[in-house]
Length: 446
Image: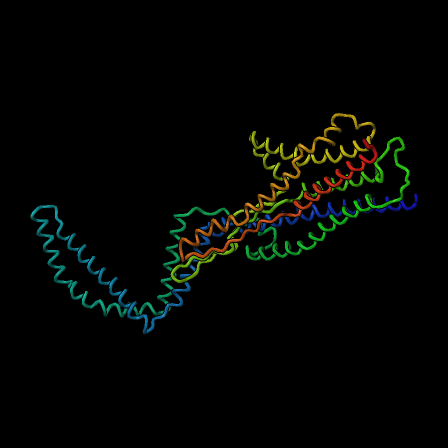
């Protein structure tokens, strides 16, 4: 009997150690992936794409260049082009004639100036026959159309249009600060954001399945530890402390391992991201002169934070209300749950006579009324549900406002492994508390 009990305890210690090591490794890996996701979100942020005037210029320039290059005079479009050119030339001649007449006939009022203006107008009418020029507009239009079809004319038009657009954009829009993006590209050795997208995306995808296996492994080890400590065992055993009467079937050493296992889940849940909020525009397409102007994978908002991260951010604000909120989060999500688990072990085994102390009695018996562990889990879940679809519903109005705009949105909000580790702690601590209460009732029947 004693040999079997020792072997069982040794196996329980090994399982506990394995759960601890695996949780530490999982925490490191989750935080590494968290950093990669944050960097990827920064690279794809909307400020470097949809909100950057230079990126609009690049896409519009490419669209115009394609349209100009593809322009060819055919029997079908030649009459339309010619009519447009004729209209422009005729309007130009009319405006020139009107401007010259206004200049010549607007004297200062003296007789000499008026005579001078009349002479200038007469000479102009003698030299330039605007009516004759207007009759020859169709002939001039034919020549202009022929010139437009030449390759060198197309190149010049493209050059002038692009130069005009660049000058207009440079004088109208403020330059986007791309220093952080440049630093990230250099840190990862990427030539451009698209290359970093592929590289970081591949690293994150490669880590997904191992992380899933590690999370399942932690739960499996903790479950195995509970089974070893709470399962059928020999009826006779020698307690570690002969002066303490433990509840039937569970000794202080095994309860210590179970308490440690719940704290492992708590530490893993608090030190790793609980939720990822990822709102992005998968694709936005605007039709310009028949050419699509497309922006893809534009991150609107991305956050992946653990409980400690949120508390640290609130504390750094320095505002009294934010510091209060940070304190409440730490007290009810970290301190209370941990002290309750530890006080439970001290109370049920009256370790060093601490059962009667007010602090141990409070945390073991009454702190459940104050604990916010289950409330926090539900709050995170409700935040996930509430955010789901928000971006799609809001940006859907933009799609309905114009047929020239097509928007595809992605809501990548997910519950991160830290949430499930914390949920595992809540369930494990509740299970352990209920078992101890039941067995304490067996040991001390009323």
